[in-house]
Image 1 (cartoon, helix red, strand yellow):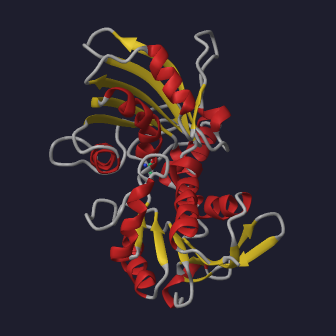
Image 2 (image 1 turned 90 degrees about the horizontal axis):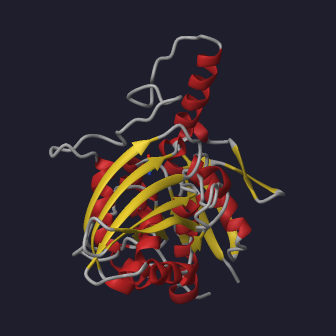
Length: 339
Ligand code: 2RA
């Protein structure tokens, strides 16, 4: 016996990846529906190799009798429809930023805080964290268990797919325009993204940081430990898929490179790729389409008392979004909504 599953925002980058991930992981499904805004109604999306789903109108959909919704439309759409689905008895795994910091909504990365899933009973909603946070906390968790992390300084190199399909099209179009000498007018990004890097993701906050940077700080504290200080600089780079991060960690206790490497090798969801020779590290190209969080370049930071630095790469559409949401659904199904 399986579940009745709704995928909201089914035509977007993450929605399509959720459908693919549910299929690949053989999630027990009795019925599946693809939902999106009115303008996408009737469009077709694939569920696995053989099944095509015709998109239905989210605004008119009645969630009564549906078990789980995996939702990734915009935050404003989620604000309306996630509580509506939850009120009808359908547990929502919400991939937008809207509910993440609400105290009665669990924010979950299954490798880090699966116990928090139980909190879904309060609102019927579980929030999926931001992509850049997810991959970082998967790597930080075994290190925190080892030496108690006190401070993290992270710089990100985020792919354009984090900004949606239009952002990917903009990188493609700008790259083409440069080769044929056409004019470039940035639209989705604040500056030219092709052959460039942009130190701004999301809007600016009052303190000069951006909202993406703020998310990395507050979400890490909510998921992993409220006492960890996190300072982030988030940068968009002309890469289509997979985010990279340079992460510097300070511990309460000394942690050797060997112990950190061993803990990371043993950690769920982490693959260590670190041979200290040319090419002996992960890059976005070869991690795209893969599930794990890849960790490379693990080394001592001799400028602080107990410091380590490392490099971390993951497919932002999979572990950073769809896979994490499906993993939450798997725990929900096996531990809370048994059929
Ligand atoms: C980005 N983190 O990469 C965002 C997507 N959630 O733009």
